[in-house]
Length: 499
Image (cartoon, rainbow, N blue to C red; front, top):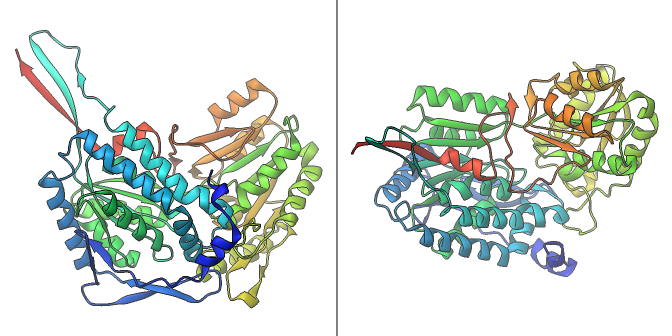
């Protein structure tokens, strides 16, 4: 269905539409920053200034948190009957779908994802997530404990109160909905900080929520720099739960802010260095080669679960890597608003510079550059990079250990299952993994042995809302998606009654 919405003339009609400057959305009102400052929104398509947003202050966060707290305490949403909350969330999902093309194109102009991926991964994914939690919210029950019959033990699930959410730039609608869906379904109020480099669609999402009937103050948007408004959100004494997707360094700071303030619960999804393992007995090596390329090069590698480490069994290494390189060479890189483009722009000049720095480091550390490695299409003014493949990557090399978050594939060989497991677990990160094999026993052994929150077998990516996404090790804690995500946004309360 999402792909059927796409036609090039409709996309082209929206690609140059003016984007008015955006202000904070606090208590249902558009408000400037307390000091009046604005910041430019740079489009990665051509390096131009797309529009401006408010550049928030700590005072703006304080205002938004107070608004969220007031909305929570007076019960306008937290005490609304579940059927009422469900009706609003379904209406919101309807509006997201009705405005899907507008949202997708606006997002592409803001963050560079190719439109063929963005339409599905952004508005339609967000709408699906909101619907999932709309349907879930009246199916989460309390419990009666099996205790001494002289007592009644009841376990209540109550919304936590005010949730702070800090959302990254790679898939703002999809990841934003992973936080907003369960947080709002549980009855909480939210203060959301979008990324400085991809914020426009989340602002529009909040406008649609108000249109759907979400009461004012329940969802507030504050733009600004992480070092200012993100820090203020982390240090707030009146935020009960903070959720974040992004870098490990920022995640550590948010934990420190919790310790320095009110010990708010902090849930982190901090990315990965995911191993994609190809055994010689893979059932379809051509399909595996396509999946290996798509798993790192779609959205220019800017995907949390990207299969950035390709581990290939020695006896098929040369032929398999050649097949992956052929797929990479055939990737059409360019204008992300062209329906035929398979890989769009890198999100920002800073991210592109970081990617190219990893290319230099990998070369200096002795890896072999097999394909790509360069910035391309500079005449557009945009931030484009070739799909890049390094072979002969050592397990301790930077591109094997650090999350690049760009279109750079690190290839390493292995001899047998034991070495594959050792290499897979050789980084401190543990978000996702994949393995291709025809041996059912081996598949289950890999699932057990690999330290990752998601392990794919004979596929890569695409897990839906019915299953959780959570990291092990330094990839974070807690889970997005599935019913398990609701646990982050409720408190358990015991009622112990003598009968």
